[in-house]
Image (tube, each protein chain N blue to C red):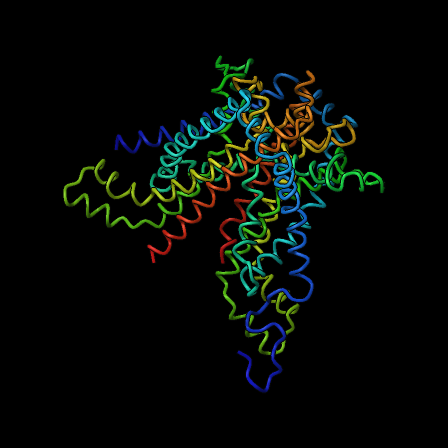
Length: 274
Length: 264
């Protein structure tokens, strides 16, 4: 952009692009912090080989933990997908006293440390429950903890879509005689679906790795309430590195797959929208 | 009308059961079951203070590092033509996809006793696992993406016109950054810092794996909640949980103050 008379800026037209050693340091930092440990996981797992991997992930206690983890994650995504959409709808379309406060506290599960969330839920739904509802050390407790931790995802991804959605389509449908359910099913839901799915995906990835909120509440009973991350922790403590590495790889692989699929679908969706 | 109230009741009921009542309960339970005095005593125990100090110390190291990294990284992603952007962009999000326990485990694989560099660090007098550096590394890992994720969209939005203008009239890259770029992205940066801090203070799983949780030495506040509860010291657990909940409330408050401003 600079004209001939002015000495050409060193860093081209891109303005404040970091120059000198800054990019190198940033990439080194990222590699040391994130890439190196994950490379170690891959390296160690490869070192143990396929047989050990298969043995570790087909061990009955590992299978039970993985089944519980993925099953609970699916259940939680479905429940939070349903209720989260309703909450987002109410927060955008409804008017009532305290709405702004409610909108502000939605992010609390992101701000509250997971172990505090676990203790919190245990206080209300544990052995000393003041409402006489003791879910502690059951599979329902696992679901409860995951519901709490992943609650904001769907709400926060649906909300902006609802805010931007024009009402004329709904009005047109209504004026053509569609009842509210038909309008919802044919007009509103298809518009919201990508947002519900992308929120649900993030929730799923978060749920399968969750540890802190589950650990106090679930009792960690093997074959019953022990989720994958808790199982990995106990394998680490008993120095069963091959097992911990195999299960870690499964968790990591699944959440990567899920997140990459989502970002692929999103990019495709964006192209469609344009 | 009926549908509207029905939906409102469902939404409020869901939020109340899952969020509002439990969080209200923990505050009420802490004081009604143990009383203000014992809770205060538990909070001011030397070990509890050591845990608070360690938590803050770790956050004080992790947050500035991740903030500087996040800004530089965001500038690289939006303003540079470096190769491999898509890969780097995916890499920076990885910490969101990894279970905290797995984070801790991978650190053990690198810095643990039988890990790649563990013995070297121990020989040179800086053990990492079961020690503060391990806690710092775990915390940096899990809170790495926030600033970058917040700043990248803001940078895209503000465009390059003003930066180009500054460059054209002879500003150096450094001057352009301080006078033009940083002021325009400041709310995004601040929002990212708030999220990073909250995560750094509240991280539990990754820290639990690498710290060894030695009371008074490598025990953070979140580890105190767990170890006090499982060692039949509920007052200690609830006192630490209350401190963390108070920090979370402040975080939430600040988040909501900044939210409307962060998009330019």
